[in-house]
Length: 560
Image 1 (cartoon, rainbow, N blue to C red):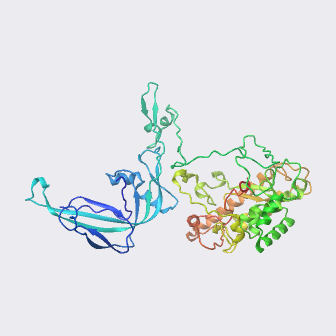
Image 2: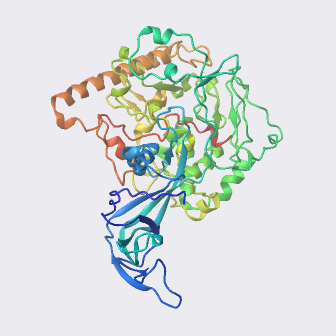
Image 3: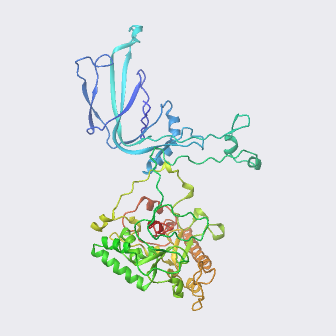
């Protein structure tokens, strides 16, 4: 058939001299280390009518695990077949990642070849090798092919197939590197656009037709029914937010039913109380004593500090993240633009009218990467959450199906866990580490991009920059708020210099002592089990500290 079975552990043995063809097939799950299989010992190629086949017992090694790939083609050369799958090394990398699909390139030497992808399935099959032997008889008649009547079979179970890759999708459109001339003739451009060796300047200056094909044509390889959505229907009284950027794409979907109030910097007034729907929504699911304690604690925090980021709230209150989405619109409104964007503000409090709110402004800080700042992407002090150099096409990744959690289930089971374990302070709660929202002078940030409030910058030199105009605030601007112009730029420069100094000191210490190479710059306790992503972090010279799940931690999409 068109499917070929490939074993990851070992190759098939060559036929013994004097034997005929050999076939190998995978059978269904066996009863154990000893399997009873039918064998025909009699003459001819099949059992005679009324003769029952004799059963034999075969032993096999249960520890020998194999991997099967149902190849969508007739295999005549196993070497070329492995080359289309990326070779043994490529197959091993794919097998090591449970979320990666096995890619098959029918033109493996063509970088523009779009792959066909196989899904990964668990299986309990066996790889069975069957040999059929016959003796070549010298006195046999020519019309009988020179064979004797007796045929012997030899069977061997090579191992258990625990994983099977099946090619169930359709092949993507293929785009050849060709140019159609005016007369209709086709000209290959592979040797002109693919760099095989270092070339001189003339190679890059040659005049060629523009050739920029897309990396992929289809995001999915299985046919799906596409349902066009109707026009977005908003609730009565809804007004789209006033966006300062002219080219910003507007909202493409209706707001989610969390009933949060959004305020822009240009809005004349701020809300004094929550929407009735937000109140009813929270009261409906506020059924546990822990929920009532979290509500009182959050209100107390907003009385002390009127503006909070969500990470700051999650670092100070132990509450399920999905319930926090319902509680925040109950006690505060959300700022969309201005110096307090992406922050939650207590109802009735207008930071644009209070100069003391300067310390609650947000600072978008990002680690800089260039030779000017002392390090390149390969030796950045904080590991990136995603790498642009390891991009995978959408069809090559098999995303796990998310577990559906309803808010009704949250009311009945408050101990449900949905926050990744690596973000928790302890195994019994949902709190984040303090580094999720506080910047310390001798500590690296968790990720390359962080949103800090000015009051959470724990460094004396940074406080001096913030309070240079203390008591002299006159106007509140959308860019700088109550601070002096360019304050944010100066803070970023100073923070970047701090991180550069930390990196240099730790790098010098790492060169002096090889034992420090695998240790983080800031020792932090890692509790509980580690996820695969955390295991990769341990291999880095400067693994990130605990903190935000996402470097762009802004929850606006949870409510829109």
